[in-house]
Structures are given as C-alpha cells and as structure tokens.
Image (spheres, rainbow, N blue to C red):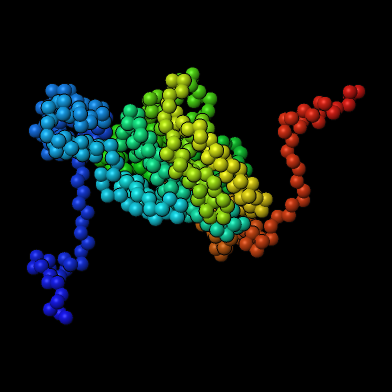
Length: 474
C-alpha cells in the first residue's frame, strides 16, 4: 500500500506540509485613498499601480478625475480610444476595487442573529481594544436577566451587529444609487459609528443612566451617549488608532467629528428642512448618512434592527419585522431640499411590524413589573454602595460609582462585575453590608412588595376630571 501513496514533491519540506497557505491579497495604498477627491494625476497614478499605465494618456486627455471613475462604463472607454475588449474589462475590474470596501481579508464572526458576519480590518482593530472588550461584561438588558433566563446577551455582540448592519445598509444604497457618491470613507465611518455607539453604557445598561445617575447626581443631565463620545475619543488616543485611520485614507479630524455626530445625532428641531444644516462632518448632500445609526427623524435605524432581532431571539418573543427586506426596498430621495432614506409604500406593513415588535418588547420584557422591581433594587444597592466603591483612574485618582464616568480610564473598569463586588464585599468592608443585603434579596427572590399602583393621568383625563366634572359652585 505504501508504494501507492502520492509522492511528495521535493520542493516541499516536511515542515512546509503543515503550513496554511497565506491569503493572496493585492492592496493598493495611495495617499488620499478616498478616490472621490482625486484629480487627474492621482487617477493616472492609480492606473500605473494597476499595470495599466499605457492608458494614462487617454485618461489625461479626457481630464478624467476620481469622481468620473464611478460613471465609466465599457462604451465610454471605447469612445476614448481603448478598442480591445480585454483591455476595457481589465480597466473596469481595477476601477471597481475603488468602491468595494473588501480589498483586504476581513475577519468572520459567526453571529446567532446575522449568520457569518465579515468586518473590515480597521473595525477589528477597534474591537480588539480594552474599551470595546469592556462591552463583553455589560448585559444588554440589565436586570431583565433575573426575569428571563435567556436574556444573557451583552452589549459586545449587539455593537458588532449594529456595525455590520450599518455597513450592509450603506453599501446597499451605494450599489443601487451610485449617483449618491458614497465613498469608502463614508462606509467605514458609518460602520465605526454603529460599532461604537454603545461604548458609554454603564453597569446594567439603562439602569445606570436612567435610574442610578439621576438619583446619585441630580444636579446633572447625563446620558450614555455622552460617555460614548468621550470613550470613543479615549479609545482612539489610547490605542493609536489615528495612524491606522490615515492608512485607510481617512481625513482624521473631519471623520472623527463625523463619527461622533452619527453616534449622538442632533435634536429633532434642528433637523427640520428649513433649519440651517446642523452638522460639520459631512455636507448637506450626505444628509441621508445621518439616518442609519441613530435616526432622530423617525427612529428607524439599524440600532433598533439589531436589538429587536437579538432581544426577541434571547427572550423567546416573536419578531415579525424583516430588516433584510427593508434593505432591499429603501432608496434615497430628495424631500424639500434634503436627501432622506425612504421606503416603498408597499413596505408600510413591514414597518408597522417593527413598531409592533417594539411595543411588544416593552410590554412583555423591558417594562415587565418584576423587571422594574429588580432594577429599582439594584439602583438602591448602588446608591448605598456609591461612596464606598473606589475605582482607580488616570493620575492615580480614585472615583466612586457615580463619578467614574468623569474619567474614561476608571470608566473602562466599571462593568456589571460591580454587582458581585457589592454582593460579596471584602473583609472589613462593613459599610457595604446594607447594599449587599439588597442584592442578596434579589438572589434569594425576596423582592420588594408592591403596595399599590395608580395609572398616570393623561392631559385629556385631567381636563375631563378637573374641568368638565368640577362643581360649578366652586
């Protein structure tokens, strides 16, 4: 039998047989690699880098710049003197690389919601920072995990999902409407915003900024989005990401502003069509990009698309909204002088399903009465422990639970693990026992008792009760 084995070629040594072949990737690095900004000379330089230098005189004679490359088709190339079909196909193939973002090997994540997710190398560098890895230890639904045993998912996988969907939506628009002139920079910025939009969440997510901080620091108005911007800046500086961004053709200062605008958005009143353009990262012609990650106009954005699907999956609740179908039917249209993401009228039922899913999630899970009870108990425990939990930050300064958000080095260390730190305090930390006792009640299911509830009156109810039904003699 041994003489029937296929012989091993001499050029392969025994050690080489066990090596995985390297991926063959052709990556062109050009200064200012956003091709939409190229002039004629940069365009000719790209042709030379692709081995097509014999045609640069034809491009130069026609004054073809980077903007014009998106519109070049076979017929136009033939008109400018490139007669051989093979040459034209080779040029078109090289030009398509400019607006395809996957010119480098992407990393693949196997996500339970979106399947196999591919992310650009720059996004991987962001994911591999301590500031982003912190999201592994923040429950997506906070205390809901104590009510729904399946709700154990974290902000980490949600953020990856939002970054992926942001890229899928903007690239779908790019492919169907090339006249929008969406650049690779635009696509990467939108993906980074989706990836980093939740960096500022505190322990147990919305419990921290919605319940704990308003009680611990009533003198301030603070939301997790504000911390997301500060954490993003800290992450970029601490990990030297500016140089990485330059490698991929970013205009760093401009694009960092754009990413933070995508995360935070603007108040609705500033987005009216007759109001002055409120953003600095991109001009009004790219207004539709601000409706992808955090849509302040109508709330239809990829952040909701991911957490609706992900939360329903882990909670065991039906999700009828199909975001993939939505991606197929959206287009950018000009409305009153601004470009907006619009949907076909026949897709209105799918959007109704989205809002119905949101309503169902709030009723059955997010505002479940036991969940609300547990969130209140965790908040009370945090308030009692606040002065005694010390977290080291920059310049060796120590911060309490409520003040760690003022220092991003300290905030990076603040996760759901503080629950265990309070529940099981170290020796000689008797001051934490009142807070620990509250958390022990959660673990043993000795929850607060409901003494009664009242329905909050609406303006209509108050009008009827206090005006129409009032005694005319009084």
